[in-house]
Image 1 (tube, rainbow, N blue to C red):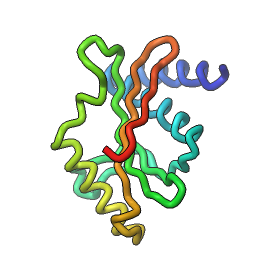
Image 2: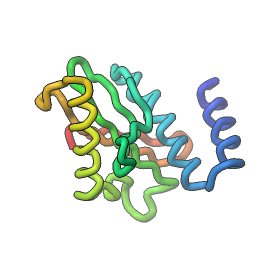
Image 3: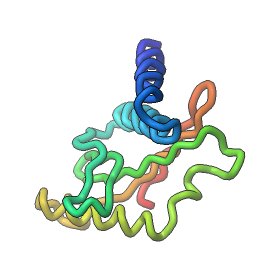
Length: 134
């Protein structure tokens, strides 16, 4: 209950500074972060961006001994389709680029890297779904 109120308050503050879509996306990332921690993931980075700025990962985490690059897609509703439909080949290529960079920097073998997707559909309560190994 406290986390829900804190989310709402943080979201209201962001709405004052950011546009509504950016604030909604960040709220979805907050929810996904807590959701993944409850699933046993250890979050090590948020909004990790390549030095070139051309690609970004919403979350980077460990799931046991696997490095996981996580994309979070948030939608107000599924009226226009589920959030996972917004992840196409171009986005996956960006995620792979981030994954390779982070794995190389951390000296993690590619076999121990995975790409996951968390979708967040806002509602009461929000609905979260985890897609492993996209």
